[in-house]
Length: 534
Image (cartoon, rainbow, N blue to C red; front, top):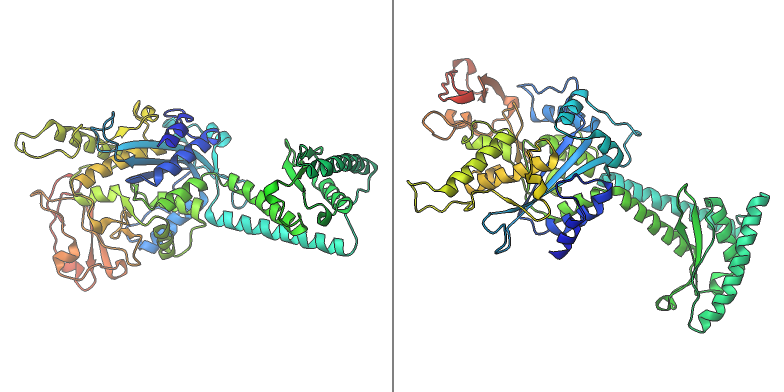
């Protein structure tokens, strides 16, 4: 769409998105997300480990979640990467590619940190990210703010409560005949001078308004909150709203320091039949003004809301930490029960795919870390496009030999390897998913299932019970792996609380307690990381 092209032109190709370029990026994403085929998400954090949070072989799903919850609640986001993938329009540079990719890399920081302005930074994590070219000075100085949905709702409720309390206090003061009035000579002089200007403007405005030619608004000098209250009270007393339905009094933002200016203007003709500007209307205007400023401070929450509204498939790679940090940053504090976390994520993102899990379960890749997986998938696309003499009739899924083409305005993301920058990792995640899906390696049973490392379980976002999945490595004959519970003829899934967990070199399976684990002899045949006996 033209609006998307215009917005992307305001961003520097291949550059990180900061406060200065956020408006253009957010507008572009709002247009793109609604039509994306899928969206990949990746995050970089200030830390990923705390004492006592190292994964253990015997961790239950809840125990593992509790450990990771501690980490995501203590540390914060540095970058959020979102990469949209679209089917390209007919013709054009991307026509030979299956998908058009648009990576967005946001520096982000919490707008109002819980518990104060505390940022916890793990030194080893910071050293690693700096080694990848991430600029922490830029993060501290120019990040896009973010606020969670829960924090935003609480802040909005607090605004309404404060304005309502002030309106009630003002009404009581008026009923008792008490009004705000200056007590110091300098304050009294300021109000008196302002009211002389108001009286002259109102006299002129009354005449011109009757003739259909209203004057320009009158803007009084900036002042603090107390003096504004004095001005409002004096204007209301001298020019009662009931007799001046055409008069509107409002506040304007000042140039800094918290001061604002009071402005008087003539009500537009289309509002002439409306009720006079009453104290209740003034309170409503205050709420609207404060909520507007609050929305501006929400920053990245705007993009999150657009992503949630789009209901598109969301891709992660080994993404449980990504989802935990996203929940804490953009939904709200992480709940103690894992089931509540899963339900909240699934409600926001109803279709999630974990490419690490898909690759592990396929058994087709010797190394399923993100970069090696991406490189393997890219090599497959190129080889398929070159043609297989043994299968001349078969059409390659990516005729151009490329998994994607970078859209106009995003070519800078293809200039160099930028691994561990969130948007580049999201780009690699989406490209790998495109190949996995094309090869039929994204079965429905793995939708909304996220990999849980070193565990007999993986995490099902759309179910209370987490599945026991088959080992992800094929044996030497090339046969697909078989879950141990199936081999033993017992029902699945096997709950980890009822299983004796055994590590077999790099492979792990669960032996149900209904079997005598010491009497069960299992032989695993295969190469790579999983070869060896029982």
